[in-house]
Structures are given as structure tokens and as C-alpha cells.
Length: 147
Image (tube, rainbow, N blue to C red; front, side, top):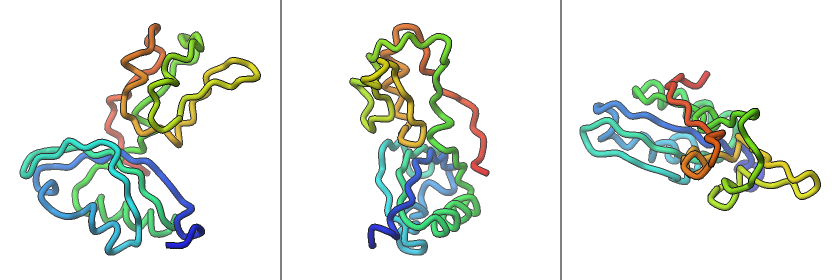
């Protein structure tokens, strides 16, 4: 895939019902829609419900076709950025979360010493929620579908 074709990237959280957990729906994203994927987090057992956090890359039009395909196969899709959010009033910008963030979605702006949160880079791993001393980083348990 060329760099231009691989330019669109999105991290999504997938919830699989039992009937979809034993089918190769994720592999088909590559085969049918020319999307590459990176598995960031997985909890899937055959014939049981499961969850998967993926980074998908490819052309935006192929991404949307792939998302439609997943929905048709009973997979619930939530952008990872909707799974973690920061309470701006609680955050004291200590920077503790930045040291554990694997995708560098959390970083300290060296000019103003403010912790910045890039929700598009967030993989929803939850590490920041475990270390935040004031509980400003929060997991959203709402399972809304991607629009």
C-alpha cells in the first residue's frame, strides 16, 4: 500500500457477539477492503463475547466500507476516543499519565506545562485511568455505535 493509500488511520473498539467471534471478520478487513490493522488490545474467546481494540489504516472510503461490513456482521463499533475522556476541571496536569501512554496520546506541552490529550491517538488501553491521582482520566462504559 502506498503512503497516500495508507494515510487515513483510526483506532476503534470492537465488541463481538458470540456468533461473530468465531468468524474471520477482522482478517476480511484486509482481504476485502484493503485495510491494514494493528491489534492494540484483545479479549476474544471462540463462541463467547469478546472485545478488540484495533488501529485501522487505509483509504477513508475503504475504512467506511469496512465499518459497514463489521456492523452487518453484528460487531458493535465505538471509536476508541469515546472510551476514554478527561475531566478538565479535575486534571492538575501532573504528567503522570504521559509516562504510561503507549500511543503518546497524552503529552506535556513544554511551553505551558499543560498535559495535552490527543483523542485521535488514544487506543483506550486504560493505563492513564489507573495512574491518575485525581481520577481525571475516565473510562466511558457507554457502548454507542459508530455513526
